Structures are given as structure tokens and as C-alpha cells.
Amino acid sequence: MKKVFVSICMAAVLVGLSSCASTKNAATLSSIGGEWNIIEINGSAVVPAPGQEFPFIGFDTKTGKVYGNSGCNRLMGTFDVNAKPGTIDLGALGSTRMMCPDMTLERNVLSTLGQVKKYKKLGKGDMALCGSSNRPIIVLQKKEVSVKLSDLNGKWMISEAGGEAIPDGMEKQPFVEFNIPEMRLHGNAGCNIINGAIQTDGTNPTSISFPQLISTMTTCPDMAVEGRVTKALNEAQSFGKLAGGGIGLYNADNTLVMVLVKN
Picture 1 (cartoon, rainbow, N blue to C red):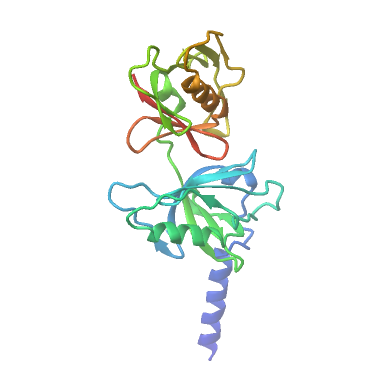
Picture 2 (picture 1 turned 135 degrees about the vertical axis):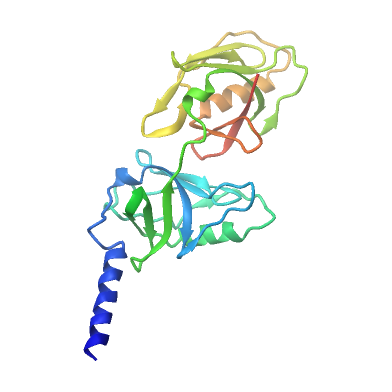
């Protein structure tokens, strides 16, 4: 009987050490910032399909934005940056609606994220997301940035803006040229020359925006493409590498607004 009692006590100690209620691995808001691969769900390792990457989630601790990919679709939402450190509610995340051949992982990711109430640090720099029971239900591993700001340097043709492809054979094909050392942008929106500054956020390595974008004032017969290009550039808040190649620019809701391909 004594041995049974000792075993129960030891189990209770282990549960306490691994729970999100433990103060040993308490985390602050800044520690959860950035992008994380989802490598484990409810004790089972996540195994991406051949040719696919891990689902991931990103936290912008300045704006309270949540973004990522749940295995097929892009996810987005917000969280309370003023909440008690170690607590977070991800119950109201949204996602795009694309169908993939196998939606099992996607459903599992979204369902489990909806149960998250807390977070804590794990060993080796990993992070645990926990439910109301304080038990880890998701394990996160810091995501390596697949494309860096410096990789954008140079000239890129704009192949898509505002969800529509740029027509071939335009007299002035839209393009942007990034001068990363000087943090400047130059290009053509389809009719007019555009110039502006490049701005980033040090807490998010994939952030990018173009404040005070200016252009010449020529009027062309068809300004529709130019309108989509300038609108997309003004909305851009982040960038990322696209699965099919090229670079995507995303707005504040993590919606793809522009596709760039290397000249």
C-alpha cells in the first residue's frame, strides 16, 4: 500500500512539472513572439505529407495578430496582448477555405488550437500550448525563416495583384525593384513609375511595408492594373516564400495581395 501511495505521489509531481500551471517554465508575452512549427498535437508527433511543410503559427506580440498555416489553409486571428503572462485564448481563429486531398491534419490543428488557454516554455527552446486542464496539447518549435529580407534584393516582376493575374504583353509590365541596403523601392505599376521607402518591424523577420509610396501622374487608357498594384503595395504588411516559387506579399489579415517572380 505504501508503494502504491509513493507511485501516485510521484505521478502527481510529474504532472505538476509538465503542466502549464507550473511556474518553473513560466513564459512572458515576448517569449511567444515569432513563428513556430506545430510539431506535436495531443502527444502525437505531426508528420507532414510528402512535399509539405509543418503547419505553423505566428504571434505578433505588438499588434496581437495571429497568423499561420494549419496544413492546407492559412489561419488568422487575434489575441489579447494585455492578458496575464502565460495565458492566451485562440478560440476565435479563422481560416481560408481551400480544399486539400487530406484534411485530417488541418481539422486536428484547428480543433486543438481552439482549446488553447495557456502557454509555457519547454526544453530546447520549444513552447507548449495548453488547454484549460493545464496539460500541453500542442508543442511548438521555433520556425526557421525560409526567406530573409536580404533575399528580396533586386528586380521582381509582378505576376499577380489583388487576386488577379497581370496580363501579358502590357506596354509597361509592372515590376518592383528592392534596394535592401538603402531600404528603398523603385518600380512601375503598369503606367506610372513608383518609388518609396521599405519599412520593417524588428520583432517580425517577415514584416514589410511601403509607407509614403509615391508615383508619377501619367494617365493611361487602362488604369485598372495600376490600381490593383498600388493598392496591394499600400496594404502589404509581410512577405513569404510561395510553394510554387516566387514571393508573396500579405496584408494585415494575412491575405495574399501580390505575387512576385524573379526577373
